[in-house]
Each structure stands twice: as C-alpha cells, then as structure tokens.
Length: 455
Figure (cartoon, rainbow, N blue to C red):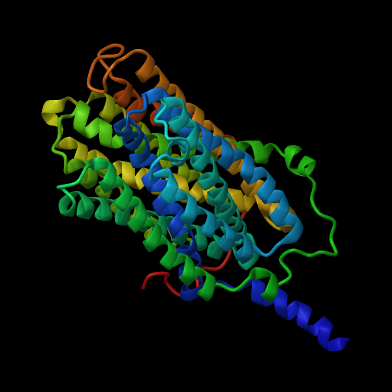
C-alpha cells in the first residue's frame, strides 16, 4: 500500500516533466497520412472531378458531403474516445479506413460500373459516398491523435511542442504531395490527367501509411503510462463546456483559422494560373514556398517559452500577416505576378503562427479536464469541417451557376478565385484576431523542453 501511494506522486512528477525529442517526433508523424490525403483533397479534388465532367456545383456537392460526414463523425468519435479510451486503436482503425477509401475517391465511379451507366447524378452520388467514408476515417484518426496531446504530458511547453511538431509534419506532408505531383506530371505525360491524379493519390497513401506505422510503433498509449483518463472521476458532460465562454471563443478562433488555411489552399492553384497567368509549374512552386516557410516557423515556435499572453500575441501577428497578404492577393496585377512568390513567404509564416497557436489554445481550454478532452477536439473539429464545406460549396456553386470562368470579372473587376483566396481568408483572420484579443486565457508558463526538437 505504501509503495502504491509513493508511486502516485512519482507518476505525477513524471507526467509533469518536459518531453524529449523522440516521443515528440514520433507523435508528430502520426498525422502524416491524414495530412497528405487532406492536402490532395483540397488541392486536386475539385479539379479532378471537373475534369471527369462534373459541373462545379456537383463537384462542390461531393466535397460538401465529405466535410459534413467529417464534421458529424467528430462529435460521436470524440464521445466514444472519452468513454472507452484506447487512442492508438482508434487511430489505427481510422487510418485503415482512410487508406482504403481515399483510393476510391480518386478512382473510377464504382456505382457506375455496377449499373453499367454513366449518369452524372449517379457519379455524384458515388463519389459523394466514398468522400463521406473517407472523411469519417479521417475524423477518427484526427480526434484520436489530437486528444493524445493533453494525455501525454501536463507540461504546457511540451504540449505546444507536440502541436508544433504535428504542424511541422503537416508542412512536410504538403511538400511531399507537391513533390509527388511534380514527379507524376513529369513521368506520366503520355497518359490522361485523370490517371495522373490517381497515381498521385496512390503514392500519397503509400507514403502516409509508412509514417502511421512509425507512430504506432514509436508512441506509447497514454493510458498505459499515466492516469490520463481517471475512471474514478465522473466524466465531464457536454454542458460543462457549453457553460464556458472560453469554449466558444476558442471554437471561433479555430474555425476561422481552418477557413483561412483550407479555402486559400483550395483556390491557390487556380489563382496563380488563371488570374495571374503564371507558368504551370507555379501550381507546385508557390504552395511549396508557403509550406517551407510554415515548416521553418513551426520549428522555431517549439523553442518558445509559452504563456497565455504570447499565444494571443503570436496568433494576432499571424492574423495581421494574412490580412496584409489578402490585400496583396486582391490588388496584385497579372503583370507583376512574380510578387506572388514574396506573398507566399508571408502566407506561410501566417499559416504556421495561426495554426500552432489556435490548436494550442484548445489545449489551454482543456487544461486538466482530461475526461472530456476528446469531446472538445471533436466538437471544434465539427465546426471547422462544416464551415469549410459550406464556404467552398457557396464559392464553387456561385461560380458554376453564373457560368463565369476563374479568370473573368465577377464584381468590381475581381474573380471568384481572387476573392476566395484574398478576401475570405483576410476577413476570417480579422475576425479571429478580434476574438483572440477578448480571450481570458489562464496562465500556462512552465519549463522549457529537455532538448531542442530538431537539433
């Protein structure tokens, strides 16, 4: 009995200790499959579907169905993980579902093959179904992975380091996707662009699955080495979070941040080609610059001694950078298109600052209330997915219904693409900065990491 009582303070001290490099890197690799397929989803899905012959509105329906399935799945998955635990088991199951279904999202229409028809409606239904299945698996993996942060350590600096490393691997995943795309476009010039997109998807799945294996082997299940989810305590109800003003503030900040990154990613390739008239290689070069800058900033952020004030300040700085970038995107004339490379640097820094700090704010919100952490991450992800799906559906539907191409004038001389890439993220950044300013975050200052993350 004495030994058991003595071991409890020891476990608490161990849980409070900063994490080293290996567990942080191992954890960060666990979202690579989700990240690389998500990047492919937002960058190439709409182009792929319209190349297949679907209208912009039908292509938007496919994406919206996936986003809605993802959003609703996060709520139920968060509740189930809070109830039963076993983060790695959920992560592995979700990853398997992602790998299998994503190949069908970029594959041929299975219902069309089974029925022997090529109806546009049937194509839309078929691709929407696999898009929904893919996003359910994606949600399972995401919620399980994000919920582990607060259960791996109670040290807030290490928690931010975990989030920063996860964001760094997100940037690596995005860069890997564009590297794969350049390789496929170069090696498979003799085949149709549809086949090229499919091989991009297959290669992305293979690469991401390797990193999932690294995560599952190198990361310990939190429930096995510390009492993260204390079953002796009553589970925290949903109403507990809905009574907190901070919950809604963090939800708004995270939603606006995801709108900034996802909407801009979806329209970036169209903007540099159709609006600026840049070379085809810019579809890969401009995003690559953005993600390299994001990766560099994410690595630098893990060295920071975090406090609540710094979280808000760094987030606001990223929002201001995106506002400036949005103004530049809207006003940039095609004859000065090379300035887009400079704008890419500020966009990359802004994305990293906003993403790392907004996710870290979720950890601050959860704090020590670990019995409900999966619900928090799941519910906030629900808001993120639904809002992004609706925003992209509106932009694509309007473009499709008005029969306006991406390089024609829409209003005041601006196209849907230019407004989608410049105005929408800038407005979301402004609103998120205002909400972040009003937050009353608890203090989170603690000791630094044991050693640099990527020394």
